Image 1: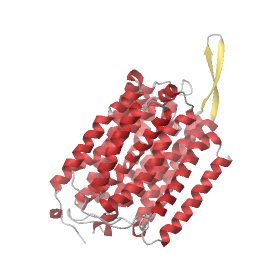
Image 2 (image 1 turned 120 degrees about the horizontal axis):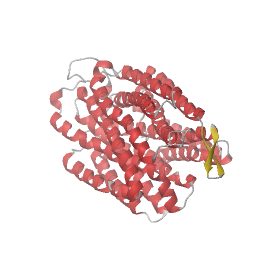
Image 3 (image 1 turned 180 degrees about the horizontal axis):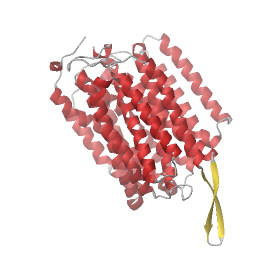
Image 4 (image 1 turned 135 degrees about the vertical axis):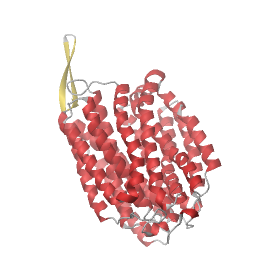
Length: 486
């Protein structure tokens, strides 16, 4: 079934696309600002680095579950209704985080904040519904650019606010934007026209949550407990067992949590590949932070604020590259665009790996090339997904995509941190007549991290190659050649 452009209110669609895309801007702004503040939060609450890591982990755990759950609920009860619910909770949560008097209350507020992850599948689905097929890639490119804008603003601003006004000020700046965005969406965005009424699969939700939570906790604590320690292995075993039972439940129940009719090869390919992209993004940010902030000759000796400013160009590249990629997607094709993205990412990461001490701007140039590849991959993969499922299933499909993105983001810090610790060298620093010996990451550590990400990019070519192309160079108002346009 094809759709004509006259079936859509294109002017309305272009009005609400930046508004819905601002969801990504607000969340990325909030999360990117948090990273430079972690040492100060740790100091204020007098907690260990392992305990402080839960500030990130608990957000990812709740976010992973909520993305899948609310994406599915959006298909049933309306995506706008669920989006407003999640945004309202998120607005309260960021306010509570900024005023948290104790570390346990801070973690509770961060857990509530994790519901914000559900905004991505709901907002992306609403955008997909409102645009004629020909314009969807351009709109998705605009949304992807919002991720870059959020990071560009957050890295220097977050570092500056945290350094001069305290980490709580970073959260105080978020609340007005979150509240304003909630009000604007309530007034200007229409409810979804596509619903898929069905009963709730509570057992499936519980099994999915058990598998996801135990896996994320396992990889988060593995660097502290040891990858082969009994608690770590027990959590991985619990995750595997829960996932196996979940698969059986989903295959046999009448109303599965993840509908069986969305699990085509394009959905599987895009979700598996996005895990690898998310891993590379999270790892590279961590790798660069250590490389730039370690003292010479082991790094570049930059401050937190300087590091944020130097990394910003990589986000600018994404902000510019994503909309352009969206406009070219019909002509190039999602699979070919993915291949180009992988090629650029591999080239950028390997050039950075081979020239780690060639100068900050050289590293930024190489990483900008790599992050351009990430931008192309993000745009092509989300469109490969959304054009491969019926519109009444968009919420749960994009929710599943967000789940795999979160899993990649959760695994990256644990693996990258382990590599930085394992391939370390001893540095000697002179403090007057005394000498201090410290363990710092070696050049090998940074290269190994980049090589792991490169290997994941190359592995992503397998699911991408098995996917079916959804874009063809056709007349402007034509629908894609798949059932997602029905």
